[in-house]
Image 1 (cartoon, helix red, strand yellow):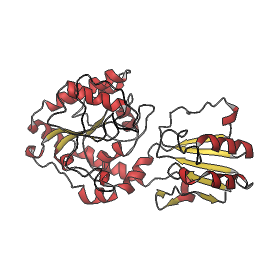
Image 2 (image 1 turned 120 degrees about the vertical axis):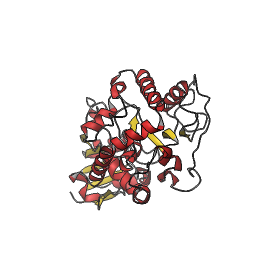
Image 3 (image 1 turned 180 degrees about the horizontal axis):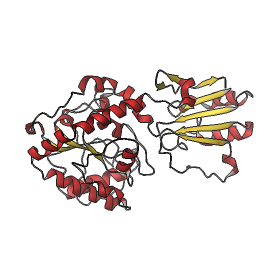
Image 4 (image 1 turned 90 degrees about the vertical axis):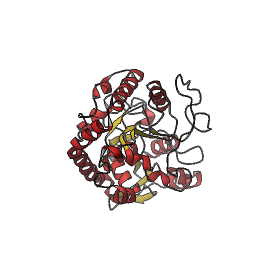
Length: 340
């Protein structure tokens, strides 16, 4: 028998349920579905199934563990592969395009309803050079905001900053901004007011020229809805993240918008230098006239179409090994025990 448990359902396996599972002798394999995260060692807590008690149980019962992970296939394992206690982990399968599948379901209404053919029809439609949507104040996002302020790219742009570093429960509490006076910034949306409103784009999204994306982590290459949405919505965008992140998208088959961006910054080793060089490139684009921006937008329309088409293709692809827990094209994270 195979136990399927997802990162979104591990909290449902409380200690009592876990003890019941431990009494069984017919479970020979655990499939841990972590395609919506990059860190497979960070789930659950002391009162539920977590990485460490799953490893202990698997070792005790000689159960093999396969992990489906969302990070890039070149990402090194997060656990020490030489440590005998982790030898129960037999496979780590990278599903690096999983969020095309996830986002296509979570944002399906927006993609169908709001994705106009081309929503910039004249230079007058461009009210902002850039839009950037930020929720959690991770350190790399704080640095991005500081650089945007340094080069005059915060005022009169469409930038949201939903949670500040002084709010409890976030990862950065001591970042020292040199240029930006941190404050909460919202756009004309209802984030935090209406359930699932994060699945709708603010009005400013459709009156901006480019999107500046800052991904969830700098620990590895990891695609989330932040990167997939401008691809689905045919939005010119650039990602400030890990080294060569934009070129990775090209390796996946997406076309870069070289007519707009000089991507040479993306290959700089040091992340602070890379981010600052990226922001300098955005400042160059901001200095263009709206007429110039609109001309470039019209020029890349075939690329926007290609990228949306590829995003849709990736959204319906599911690894064969997950077919037993796939409903249509959506992977079911409900805890299940199925025959091998």
